[in-house]
Structures are given as C-alpha cells and as structure tokens.
Image (cartoon, rainbow, N blue to C red; front, side, top):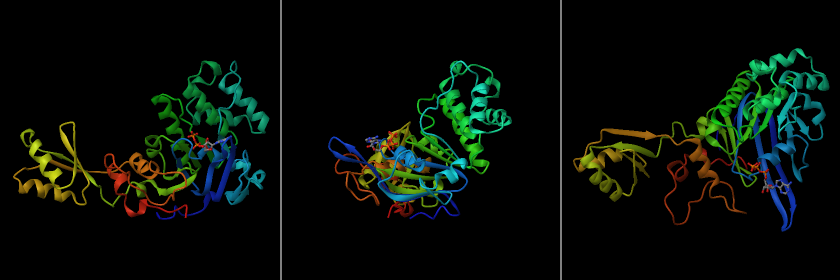
Length: 346
Ligand SMILES: Nc1ncnc2c1ncn2[C@@H]1O[C@H](COP(=O)(O)OP(=O)(O)OP(=O)(O)O)[C@@H](O)[C@H]1O
C-alpha cells in the first residue's frame, strides 16, 4: 500500500456499496469502496467509464442511498448528518441551470440571494474563475468552457471548504480544459479540498496532489501522484539512439536479449528491462555505441491502464494480471513498482 495520504480526511468511505436494479437482476455501481481524500489540495478520482465515480459522488451528496457501508465528510456521517456539513460543500454533479437571457453577474446575484450569501461574493467568485471581463454578457453567449466556469463560480458563492466536481471538463476544448484546470489548482492552493472525477488521466495528472483510482466500483490504488508514478522506483523503459547504420543490428541485439524494441521517431524504445545499463552493455559488446540512453518515467495514464484494463467481473482487484496473448503490456502496466500494487481496497 502506498504511504497514507496523511492528516485529516475531508472524505472517507468504508465498504461503500451500491447496486441498481437492472433487467438482468442487480447491477453493481460501487462495490465495497474505501476512499480517503485528505484535507486540502486537489484529489483526482479516476476510473474508466462506468467504474462508479458518479455513483460514489451521488452517495456522498445524499442523492443516492448506499446499500451498505459508511461515508463521512469532514468527520460527519453522510447522508445522516449531511445538513451539518452541507454548508461547507460545493458540488457540480450535473449541469446547473442558469437563465440564458441574464448575465453571469445577474444569475449569481439571484443565486446569492436564494442561498443567503452576501452579493459582495459575486464579484469575488467571478474573478476567481476568470469571468470578470464577461460578467455583464448574457449567459447564452458563453462558450461551454465559460458556462462550466460559471457553474464553478456558483459553487464558490458560499465559500465552501470542499468542492466536488464530476467530470468538469467533459466536452470542453483544450482552452476550456486549461481554464478549468487552472481554477481547480488555484482552489487547491488556497487550501480548499477539490475532489475531481475524471476518466482522462492526462488532465488530472497535471493538477492533482493525490489520486484514487477505481475500477468496477472498487479502489485499485490511491496515494500521492508522485508515488503512483513510481518516483525513485526507476523506469522500465529507455529511449536509445544509435547511428542510423546501427539501428538494425541494435534492434536485433536487444531483441535477442529478450527485450521489446519499437522504433519511434528515429530512436529505439526499449521495454522489458530491469537495468538500463544492460542495454548499454549488450550494445557495447557488439561494438554498437548509443548516442542517447534516456530512462522513461511511466505516466499516470500507463499506471491507470495497468491497474484498470485487466479488471474482470468478479475478479479480485489487488495487483494486476497480465493479458493472455497479444503484445506485452506497456512498461508501467507490466511491472509496477511494489507501491503501485496498492491494496487500499483491502
Ligand atoms: N441509475 C442507474 N440505474 C442503473 N444502473 C446505473 C445507474 N447509475 C449508474 N449505473 C451503473 O452503475 C455503474 C457505475 O456507473 P457510474 O455512472 O457511477 O460510473 P462513472 O465512473 O461515473 O462512469 P462515467 O465516467 O461514464 O460517468 C455503471 O455500470 C452504470 O451503468
């Protein structure tokens, strides 16, 4: 198991389970989920489509009743004691409704009145999400990204300590995604806790301090992003450059040594090694000298794929299984550092 994320927890679930009625009996939404979200910073809640992220968030917010298990927000059991803590929580689960013909400022002012928040907060939150310059324009003229930022602004009106965003960048273009990311990071830097669900790893990798990875309703890994990426544990792939005339012999030497070699942009991507020095040695023994030998760090995407791709229904969720047949797994998927084979769900 990775090192505990430590300190107080904004969210904790234990053995959380939710099934839905389906034509084929009961479908599992969440299966015994143990989740720990530390106070402060951005926590990525990651998993493929249908892995139970939305169901979990809906249970935390009292929108869906769990079959079993417990959940707390800032130590308050939810949904039972949700009223005690709801003032500290802002969430976007579905697209909120705004009046299309009203400006952002007018929409937020109405909302501030409705929830009993001073109107002075409106300009603060518009600034927070970078909408000050467009605050007087009608909502219907906004891009999708701006609409989503306004939704975030609405959740910030009551200055919550915990923000829960379910796939907030869905459908946005790269500029919109960047804006939302920037906003979430800034909230995390202010000491707020941001739980952001996503199935797009690359997005979360850049802003999350800690992550939980779920597959088929269960936790398969959690911890600090740096730990999950195996920092200090070494990389199991290297990029090798040799003289163009040596590419064929270098490929043959390395493949004979049991390594997987791919050509990529004029370089060789070598996978399946325990020690990058072995590549150098093997080449040197055949009189081939590398111009470049760069260990490659696995990214969160490959960690995620390694942990979630091979989950099969009813299978245990600890560790990973190798695919039968087919090409070898990518480096991070094939050989995770031991702290990746976390058993937080255990
Ligand atoms: N209201 C419902 N009725 C029946 N099954 C449901 C319902 N809501 C969710 N499910 C099922 O529960 C499982 C988990 O769904 P959920 O939406 O929580 O996953 P998710 O990780 O949020 O997925 P996505 O990234 O696609 O939003 C899926 O198999 C889904 O089909």
